[in-house]
Length: 336
Image 1: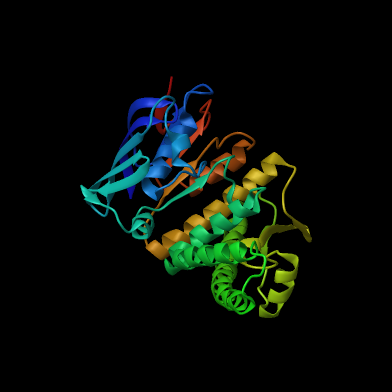
Image 2: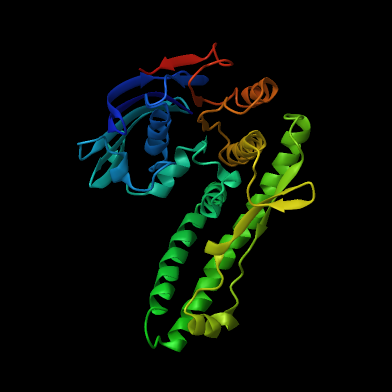
């Protein structure tokens, strides 16, 4: 699938912008502050129903405006689709004039994966962002994963609220803990399975494609709920375990790392993990997906950039950068 065009109205610093895209590499260039990342953020928003940078839609609205609008034309399996995304206090999404009520199905059918310095996936310094990236791959493997996550969040909120009561109902708290454990176990089992798939793909990528990338893999530390701990939680007024506390680490040179000091190494590992995720999702969907590479060239040498270019050459790719050194044969969009 590929995006033919997008119309952006009152989104970030763009008052009105119409852009047309090619099937392969689309390089969005311009000086700092021209809204390069905002363009690929708009692409992600209309395809995935949300930004990869900001959870609050209000903060995506152009200054002194109250709403924003996105419209895109998408080609997929020899069919053309018109997508419309409107935010005006509430979000409404349309596909070929029909309002979308099942967002999960919409996201599943319009897959896009992102690398950005603001969203480094499994190499992010923030554990919540790591879990979010892994959960997205889990969702493509099983759409039920998103339903379980939502149910888990609702029940977790109930449990947190109960801990604020002076004398919470002990039996009810125990019952909620038991139900939360069932949901947490499902989430964690999916995460373990997908992370193992990612590591298997990483082995293939490191040895057959990106041969100059150091050997590394991901490990997950699951925070397993124990039903017997509910009394301790009541005593301490604190939730001690659950899928929301899972931690993901990089195993490198026989050591476990939560973050990296080397920018170039971290970026290479992040892009390699993204490539692994692309392979998994494409095998599941049996179709190529759209890839966003924000600020790709910074911190990478020529060999690694060329390796990533070769890997992603079958996808429609949106790249941002101040200076285009390696994608001059792609479709160039210069913002002013």
